[in-house]
Image 1 (spheres, helix red, strand yellow):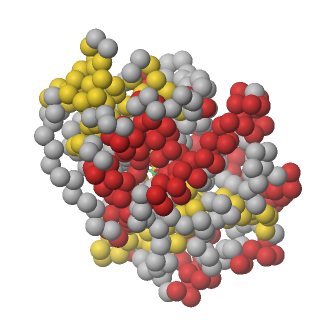
Image 2 (cartoon, rainbow, N blue to C red; image 1 turned 135 degrees about the horizontal axis):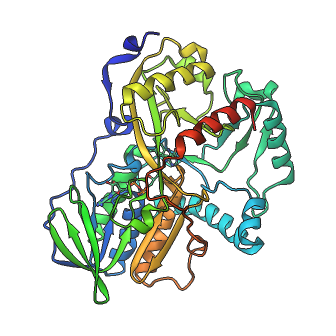
Image 3 (cartoon, protein in one colour; image 1 turned 45 degrees about the vertical axis):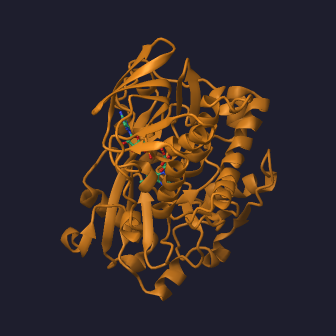
Length: 433
Ligand SMILES: Cc1cc2nc3c(=O)[nH]c(=O)nc-3n(C[C@H](O)[C@H](O)[C@H](O)COP(=O)(O)OP(=O)(O)OC[C@H]3O[C@@H](n4cnc5c(N)ncnc54)[C@H](O)[C@@H]3O)c2cc1C
């Protein structure tokens, strides 16, 4: 297909989710002169923290430089997992066995938290335990997945099971994988509904949420902070940084620890039900063993394919990234060759040098960030833990606040080293190492 024929007449460079569900208009808020807690960033992290601090009776102000939810929290692929990338063995080598177990347990806790939150708060967001199919793009990687299933998870029984290539048609209609593994506990969510539903609860809890009000500087004054914003100063007792992949110059210490990387998604035009039922016979979320992973799923109404990947590092023109994503989609599903793209969008995820999320505190300045592209559950969970920590509600600190948050010499927030790394990853994906 020629690039010019790739897009539907009504193509939009907005996330599919925002078109599918009307987004709430946040009531206008006057900037208060002071607040017990100021939260920078109104994505899942900031809102989950605000729900805790506001309900604990602390005056809470959430500020976002853009419309609340403008960041990754309304742009993602709607896949909910336990969000921890390193294996138990790798975590044990780094932190020792006890802490490794605690971290993995909190990964599971993040998924459990999502279910509890959605049910207790009655959030209408279609959180469903659909399971994940994770495809092996090389034969030896399938063997490794089989071994992983056979040895079982070190901390809990995930019920994961391998699916050989010969039986794969019930999971996925493609020849591109050599089998895969099903993680039955992973879930999907309607991204267009989840963020607005949490936002509503945060406003009901009495927190003030103000968009289009960038925080431009933070300085310590006495035991608290002066928060300079685009619309004037605010005195704060505590501050929570919830800026993840959009962490700018506000706090150089955090910026030096976050690597912003582009992640890209397209939505296809509507496809016939029979085609969807052949290529994606279930509602599972889907991903594969590539380092530059593909993540995809049917849209909640099963009319479109939502297909995501790391096809660039920093391209911000969604028409350009759509061409690459469509090419990769067709490699998996040749029957979609003539299917056009109706939406294409991107966002910056916050990676870290140790591929772990982090939270913590330095004298009243809290943070939760670095979800490495897997933060629907973890950002919600660590946001909640951070809000509780700021409100003094928990004696126990999250294990994620007890691991060091590494940076690298000369890194100040501009990831110059990514381009060569991606070339290496592409090569490794081709070879399968
Ligand atoms: C394309 C894409 C697909 C993804 N798919 C998945 C997926 O399927 N599953 C999954 O688990 N995760 C996925 N993720 C990651 C997930 O969406 C994020 O980890 C999560 O949303 C992070 O939430 P957050 O609240 O920490 O950050 P964000 O939602 O990014 O919010 C940060 C906010 O901080 C604001 N901000 C920054 N600086 C300032 C300032 N100085 N003043 C005021 N406000 C400021 C920004 O405007 C932004 O709104 C995906 C991400 C992308 C981009």
